[in-house]
Length: 117
Image (cartoon, rainbow, N blue to C red):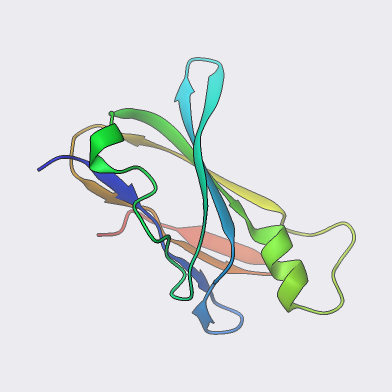
């Protein structure tokens, strides 16, 4: 089995998937942070394809950046200035070629994550 990376974003304040959130994936090598791709979540709060598909998978250190501020501003009124949460970065390592799943549970004032399956 080759490795790949997926994500899932749930809006815990509204009790539903976080549709339309931009998610960026960066590869971290030393002090260099390189954008791999940017995708949007679909109606189920997932991306339509893996964030890092099997054909491009490499072990190493990565960072997912969830654009929670834009999502929150569009769904909660009135938007805060400055936002309490804006971009939510999650830096993690992938040490073997397996399925990695990094979900985000988000609300206007908090978030959590874990290694899912």
